[in-house]
Length: 476
Image (cartoon, rainbow, N blue to C red):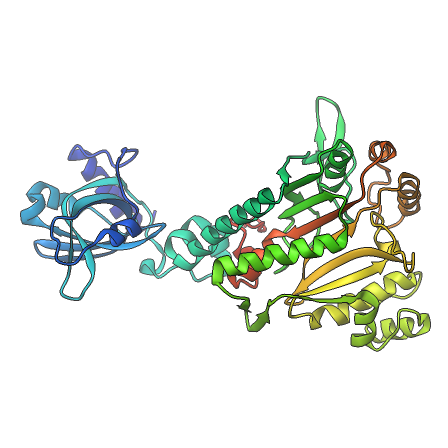
C-alpha cells in the first residue's frame, strides 16, 4: 500500500474514533454551487448557503483554513475559522484531504481579492477519499488513463464534465425536436435472430433456454419499418448499436444512433429534417452556424450543399462513373483492389478514399449506386442509382438516409442477390420482414444520424472516445 493511502486510512480511523461516520451520510437541502454563487448580493451579509462538493484545494493557515469545493456546476471557496466552528470541529478539519466530499453551511461574503466565499458555520464529512487525486487536482493528462478512469477524469477536468453535460442537453433537444413534429419514441430488440438494416459484422451471443444463437443489433431499421407497416407513421429510436469491427477516432464497437422513419416522405424530406435539426441545435448551443472542429473551421450556414455521388466522383477524382476502364486505372493508382470488384464498388471505394476528405462544410451526397443500397428505392431518372443520401461534415459521415424500398418482390430479389456475398454475414434472409412488406408499407423516408459523431462536432472533440463516457478499451 502506498504511503499516502496509509495516511488517509489513518485519518479515516481517527474520524471514526471521534464518532464521525464518514460514509453514507444524508445531507438535505443543499444548493448547487452555481446557484450559491448566483445568490450572492453585494453589501448583504446575511445570505445563507448550504452546499456539498469534493475538496479540490486546501490552504490551512494556523487557526483558519480555506478550501475550494467542486460539484458538477462549479467551484466555490470555503472559509473555516477556529473561533467560528469550535476547537473540536476545527480538529476534524485537519483530518480532511484533497478529494474528500464535504457538506458546508454558512453565510456568503466576498474576500479582499473579490472571491465569493462561504464563511462556514458548520461542515460535515460526507465521504473520505482514500486515493490522492492526480497531479494535485490539475487533472488526468494521460489520455488512455483518462478513458479508463472516467470517474476521475470527470471530477478533475471540468471541460470533460462540460462535454458530457452538453451531450445530455443535445439528446434532450433532439427528442423535443422530434416530439414536436409528431414523432413517437419506440424501443426495438437489441438481440435479433437475424441481424439486418446495415452491412456490418455482428457480435454473436447464445440464449441458453431456447438454445439459439442471437446477434446484438447492428441497426434497428427492419423492426422500425415493421412499425410503419403496423400503422405507426412517425417513429424514432435513439438506440445502442453493436458492430464487431475496428476501433478508431471515429469508430467504437458500441455506439449511439438516432434512427427515424416518416410515412409518406422520402429522402428529400429527410434532408429538410436533418438540416433543420442540426442548424436548430447550433442556434440553441452557440447562437450561430460557424464552429471549430480541431484545426478546421466549419460553416454550417443553411442551405447546405447538395451534390450527386457521380458529380463529386468526377469533380474530385477526375474519373467518370461511366468510365469503367478509368475507374480501374484510378483504383490501381490508389492501391485499391480491382480483381473481382464491380464497377459500383470500385467507384464507392474511390469515393471513400478521394472525395470524403474534401467534404468539410455540410454536404448531402445524393444518389448512390443501387447495388450498394439494398433497402432503397431506385431513382426514377436512372434505376442504376438509389434515392439515398449521406451527410458529410468535416470529412466524416454523420447521417444516412433512404427513400425506403417498400416493393416486397423487389426487396426479396435484392436480399437473395446479396446472399453469399461479403455483405451477407449470416447467410439468412429475414423472411418475417418480407412478410411484413407484403402486407404493405407506406412510402417513407428513413434517416439515421450517428449521435456520437454529431456530438463530436458540436463539442469540438476530434475523437469519439471523448464523447462516450466509457469507450471500449483493451483490458490491461
